[in-house]
Structures are given as C-alpha cells and as structure tokens.
Length: 306
Image: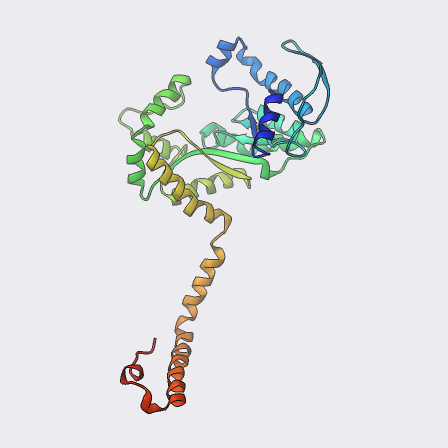
C-alpha cells in the first residue's frame, strides 16, 4: 500500500491526499475474514507503519496479522515532508486518537448525522489532547467536515431534482445498516432536511448548515459536499455551480470589499452627482468658448446633461 501511494504521489506531482478509515461495511470485514472488532486496531497498526515508511524509516515489525523485515520504500515522498494523510472520524473516539497520535488530518465523514454531530467537538478535543501527549501538533486547518447537499434556485426545485435518485439511495443506505427510519407518509427529502442531516434547498440553506456546524465544532479547515447522485448530472452540476458562486464567496469574504464599495457609492450618489453634472456642463461650455459659440450646433448645445 505504501509503495502504491508513493507512486501516485510522484505520478500526480504531489497533487494527492490520502484518507484512511477502518471501513463501515460489516460485509467487507466478513468477506475478508477480519473480525469487526479488530478493524480499528488494525487500521492504527497499519497506518503507523505506513507513516514511518513515508518518513524513510526501515521497519521491522511482527504482529498477529503481518510480518515486516527490513521493510523500506523504493520511492520517498514527492511532497515534503509527506503527503497529507487524513483519518476518518464519525462518533467513536478512535479517529481522533489516531489523528492526534500521528499528527494527521481528521475527516468527519458524517458531520451532520445526529450522533456524529453531537460528538464533533469532543472528538476534536480528543485529537488535540492525544497530540499533546505524543509530542505532535494538530491544527483546525487539518479538520474537514462532510455533509450531503443538493442546491437549486428554490427549495421546491431542489426537492424535485432529488426525486431522481434519493429513494434508491435511502434503500441502499438502509440495506447496509438501518440508518433512516422514516415514518409512513413522510417525504424522504423532508425527513433529511428536518433532521438537519442534509441540505436540499438553496445556497442560503447551505450557508445555514455550515454556520450550524461552525457553531457546534468551532473553526475548521474545509467543508466537503458528500456526493450521492441524488439528482441527475445536469442538476448536480448546477448545484455545484450555485455552491461555488454563492456559498464559497460568503465564507471566504471574497465579496466583502466589493459590497462595501457599492454601498459607499450608493450613499455618496446624491451628494456627488450634482458635482458630476456641473463638470459635464462646464466641459460643454469650455468647448463652446474655445471654438466660438456660433460653431456649436443646436444638437450639441441641447445635449442632455448626464
């Protein structure tokens, strides 16, 4: 795994990040013959070795499921000191502990889920405290929160868009694990919105969700939209466009100076316009003086002052 990741780091010239998690699907663990209770411990063991290999160490290690003897990489990282590595976190403390121990980024893959939302601040604090105990540092810029969104010009349009694939997604999610218990007669879109799990609405609704996450978590580095193919591709592209045009500038303050400038111009319009009109009138009068009043046509003389 470490060799393949290093190859990808070089092939992309450093335009790559790596994410690790214990795996959500119990069926995957069953097919691989891994006890479900062992997945988090094995992730921790393997990731510690991968980080050491990335750092150029020669590793010899024996565990109950693998053996390494003088293991080393043929390629060291293109990115220095190493590519960014993120560890998933949902609601158990294991993700925060591992991120803190190794000084890695933390990816909260279900930030808007009720249980995960309640654990956001606590799991980040676990990462901070664990980092301090192991001589590592973690920054809020390394914290990434994930939630599903589909945006449209109106809430009604957004709900109509997700009829394309939302029901199939709900069936899939509940087949893996019973996650959504929707009462009979309740629209799935309404259920997801009312429970704060998802945004199916406008850019203003997206801003409100991110504000809610910030209020719960505090500052964080990145918000990621979880893609589920709820809408067809043209509607999905439009959703991303709306997010880029209205939501991202809101949080980056990209339009603050422009908006302030526009308001200043609006406030000064009435007081400055007479001076502008006077300057225009004087320009025509000066022209008339320079060439002689008789040479100024009636059309020019009667030209409206703007």
